Amino acid sequence: MSSETKYAKAFIDTFGIDEAKLGGLKYQDIDEWDSIGHMNLMTVIEECFDIEMDIDDITDFSSFEHGKTILRKYEVEI
Amino acid sequence: MSQSPLTFDSVGILASQRNRYPLLFVDRIVEAIPGKSAVGIKNFTYNEWFFPAHYDDDPNVPGFILIEAMVQTFIMTFLSQEKYKGSKTNFVGLDKVKFRRKIIPGDTLRITAELDSFKRGLAKGRAEATVDGEYACGAHFTVSVPGVFDKFIPKK
Image (cartoon, rainbow over all chains, first blue to last red; front, side, top):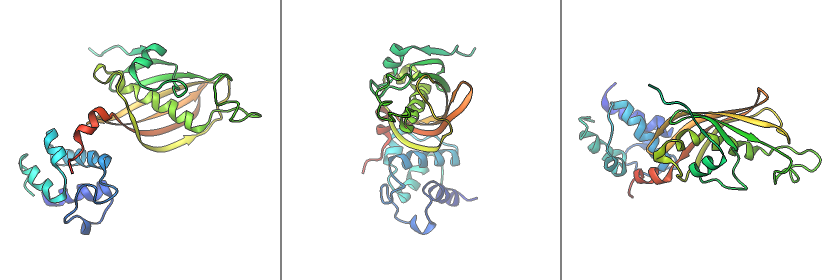
């Protein structure tokens, strides 16, 4: 599975949404991406890519697109 | 070498968690392995404030109080750790709830709780309770420690 597919699947599985909703998706755009959903998403992404994100990156992870930029710090290219 | 289990009397429980009368529903923690599990005891007598109201002709413990007794034992799985002692907690998720036995005055509830995960102030786990060895109720919980959790919420 490619990194891009794994990344998208983390959102789809955590929030139970369709792939079509991912483009432009931001924190709190949908009910499922609230503060609890955010912590669940961070855990899934960390397990998926075998990384541990810093607190600043977790609070900065505010959209589907920006998350890709953050993951580059951890040598995850999407 | 593994740490010996801890025990907490009512004073120890009050020092560890923030629930107070009339909403404290665990009397004693007979065994806590910090970061892993806890076993709590709750004795119900007719002097409980809710029995005359639920119900006058058939006193039994309301379901929400059984949930509280279980979650208050559950939070001792992590509040038994010195770094979280005395923290406030927020109940954020409840799942797979089962009630299988009526609890009446004179019953002693023995609650066994397990912590499945604790990350960034978000605890997930489960508890089940018995009376005289008979299964009474169970549930899965998600609880946050806002003092930790809030530091990880995205800035908008």
